[in-house]
Image (cartoon, rainbow, N blue to C red; front, side, top):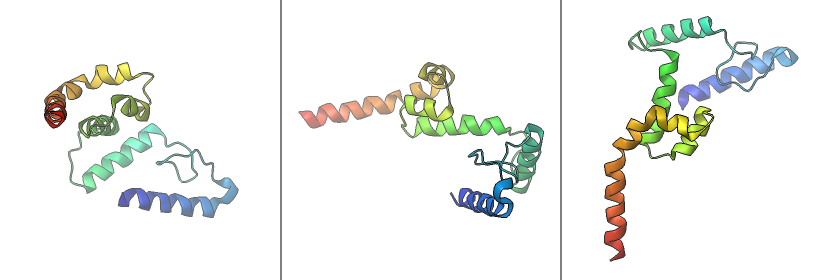
Length: 121
């Protein structure tokens, strides 16, 4: 959250500095003028960030998307909500890609249902 706040503040400064020259696309990660970042530039910046953080250089930007999907499903966020946040055309796509995570949560679901029925008695 701290990093997102820093990014928001940086973009606010760039907006104020450029005024009408800032082309706001509503992006979290954007060029200094507000436009989408060129993919090769984004990848270069990502690799630099990995190096500074002493993380494996084999990570890809797309791996962040998988990490977010995994975290949402493991946190119990409904697959439909996760699907919408990921921008998938349907929840079926999300479930096809991440069904192994949902299946892994099956024992947790069984335990919760057991509690519901135990408390009902």
